[in-house]
Length: 317
Length: 72
Image (tube, rainbow over all chains, first blue to last red; front, side, top):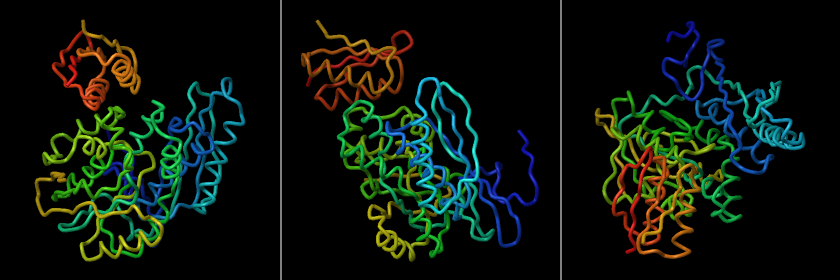
């Protein structure tokens, strides 16, 4: 397929990244992204917040600042009360307000299945765009949010998650990647993406693919929801985790001492997951300290980039 | 006589819950679970193993799988 393009497209579909980037002038480019999904939590207000945090995340992952947003709504008005829709949109608005993003419009349609999300536009300096495709040998890899939201959400459906765990995971999914992006902006970051549906290893695979480098992950250092280990070993794993693993089978190898439950968690599809940052080794520790000082306490250095053109991901315990 | 759980037609996490329920209820020596997706197969195997069962055999059956489990 050939896509229409012009010389101002800085990041387009030819090298699909977290968002598209279009140059307006020598010191301004637009970042554009859109994301929407069906409810992942029961509470409509929290669903609205999570959907907004998730939609905004792609702009942060590109090194940009989100500025405007538009709602996308599909709503079964015959089956659900308008108070539910109002709560969803209020959740979205509150999250946008927190991110200092304005809502400038939107569109809604009648649909059998409820869906909500946003299209978001942000600004970035054309020379400060962060993409997935710039891993450098001996970079360290940093992850800013714990993994396991897909597994915990499956457990919630099975009524096997406590209220306390449900709330903790919900708050984390609704947490903006804004702070992480702010902190990261002061450091010479080489590459960045956000961890969502493909899971940590799926998104890392996108960074590794075509980079001429490989990556080493220390599974034991990866931040996770501790409860996810037991839930995964009980088989409360979403189909997406298995698809992610199958899709990247040729690229990812585990040392035998990485427990199966932990392997599953590394492929677990995340909703509104954290940023995965690749940064030169000497700056990694100061960035980690700055992230933790800013309140992102679970951030961790989880691995490194290897000078190995095989483009493989090796996971050790 | 083995206990059989027919979880075909159910999507996750239902097959896992049905398997755990059967184990909780009777703790059968032999347990057979029928599933119709790869995800259910993987999840049911993990669920049974977490409860001290061993996977004896996974055989294709119809459009799904027949998972044979034994306690211990």
